[in-house]
Image (cartoon, rainbow, N blue to C red):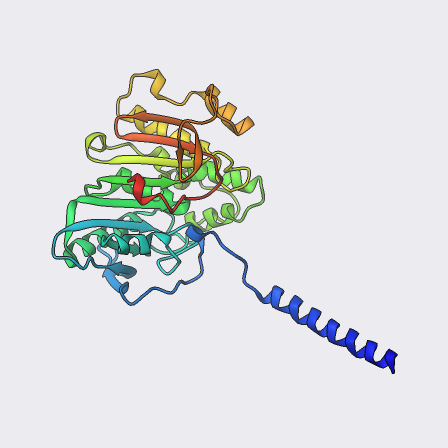
Length: 330
């Protein structure tokens, strides 16, 4: 009798254990708040809109929030990540709404896995078209248009800085990609999926078409001189990225050097030296005498350089955007 009860108890324990394991296996993996590629729930205030592309006439979608005041308000253009699209969760959306800013989250050809995407000319046109749509359909202050993107969205943000026909007051590029040719080698050597995505984007099958990769890379574009006075560019990268994430900090540091060089900087102290780059890559520490130059979002700043309206910040972190403070840094 006691044995039978023990058997039943064990059976119940086994059943409960099995259910617990099944539930754990069924639970979806967690994602970074700023890089959750799953379709998100957008409140009723955020309208799904269609925008006719001036590039090829194809209808492009976006989520759009219109400020509820009659006075002109800022416009925040939030750019989705490498593998995301306009439906993915954006932690900046609720923040823009709480500030009563206008907000748009365009698709710009979706994930970077086909030729129309991945900073093609159509991508740049789509982002400009999204800004046009917001300005025509909401009370937007044209002097307060802001762009933010991280990772693949950071790459798109660099593209906006280089080629947008709009006057953008401030752009934030978090852990951006600036050089697809370099990214191909960086991710292929580590066996990450992104090098295959790049091949799909430029229509290659086995080997990289270097010319096409460079054509889509802001690092190889000429910086317009009018950006020197009209647009602030702030680049943020986590010092551990490339170790714990896919994109090494050199993608940001080299782009900063390229832009200030294009804009005519003659002060050697304003550039990031090769020695400083190597030190940060090898040690993941600041090359300066102190490891902390203030902080952002509670994270130490290890390195910072500024030339006029262009800034590079290397913070304590990995491949991430500090979305809680991003709007405050504009």
